[in-house]
Amino acid sequence: KNQNGNTLVPTSYEQNPQLGSWANKRKYWHSKKPLPSNRVLRLESIGFVWCAQTIIEEANWESMFEMLVKYKGQHGNTLVPQSYHKNPKLGQWVETQRILNLDEKLPSNRVLRLESIEFVWCGQR
Image (cartoon, rainbow, N blue to C red; front, side):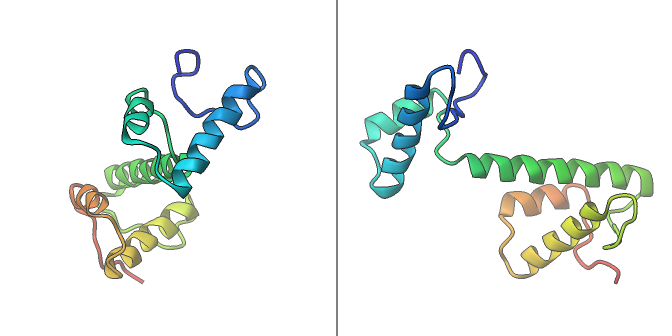
């Protein structure tokens, strides 16, 4: 963590292969049967990440949210067309947020973030 700023140790960490293997085993064992709480707390106290995929997904969501904020700044609203030619992924992402919310699968913290920028839940088709 001191060298890289995080605890995301790759399984095949060239500088210290044993560390990569050790970290990967902790994640695996914890997914099968939770480790003792004192070990979990010690690892989490240094920012140990149990599932890197979650962090990647969160970063991707934040990135798209920031693009939406910029879009709103330029256009005055969050009505991104599904086929927005300047950024097709943004239009698709906005529609996905609407669908997830409609299906009650969008986490409440994300709903609140979107509502904080006056997100329009019923888009134009």
